[in-house]
Length: 451
Image 1 (cartoon, rainbow, N blue to C red):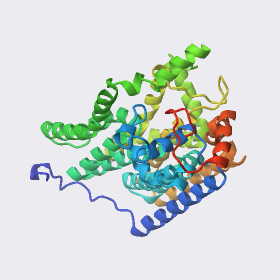
Image 2: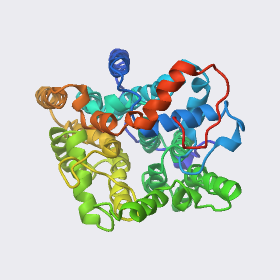
Image 3: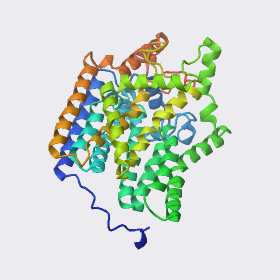
Image 4: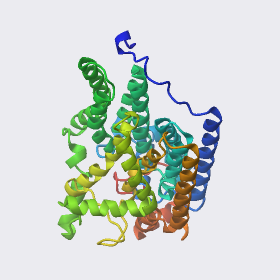
């Protein structure tokens, strides 16, 4: 499809381009950091600790290697895309056992996320300093570096959300159907990776409707196209649950769902989640989580960037896509209060570690918003000074967060404390199979054996 002459905007300024050498230098930097991070955490035995990560690898392996391979092995609670992507790699025993089948996918997603954040920061604000600050916000976040080495779904979900925002930014500049289709495809993938992607859809659709000054009919057509493509993901998942489990909401309230787990916990212990039913308390816990996993200075710089972003929206729509990165904040607060999603932080009751990685979903926002301080109206010298200050603050925070060693990072410590492999029963099973396993098939009840 092509834009009609009436839809073209020849008076728009020529898009600002990132110098070619900067692309290469940034790509090499991202590749080096990604590989070094994966090697660092893997060689220290930290990259495959989470019970969810072990279960993801089990789910990916079952698609090709089980009594009922194929569609029968797609479950109901976890969305399927991460397992489908990891499944070919998980057929390799080494990659499956070590979790690298998922860690490689997460690392690749992390690398692309960092590159897109660099481009977003630079192209929205039309200068390299803004892009470098956005890049630093991601590369200097130890929690994200760690998750990029793990078989967990957060890095892939973050990549899709950043790709949606970047494609919509390109659409806001060009109005091309190609950019819009790319955004819709990325949003579709995101809705099949994590449920946060579902929450992005109405905001992204509204953005498509408003971001270009087309006639109302054209706006409605394009927004409908985006919603139709992206919304196919949730629709397919509802159909899958209805067909496979006779309940389209099986993932939400069925066996193994968050609500089912919470009901079982209440029945066994009568201990409710601290945030259950309270949006205010949920907000407090989530903000405390952000301080722990992202860092106070990064949040302060992001708050400063929000002020600059709000001021710039009056004169430019280029930065409007940043609103999509704020969506995880209300999503998680609402989920903690009303959807049986727990999050425990060591600084608040019950003073333990659980699901701290949910805060990492805000890294894209915390990385991008400081870039809006680097307005193109500022002189190059002032931008250079601000860049040095921002990088020094983020670098100092990185040193502070990692000073006690990798095992003391909150997201790592959670994995160390809560890994199912520490349980006596699991250790006994592991040691038995290390000594006696002969390579033949072992039958276990779903969810009851070692992942």
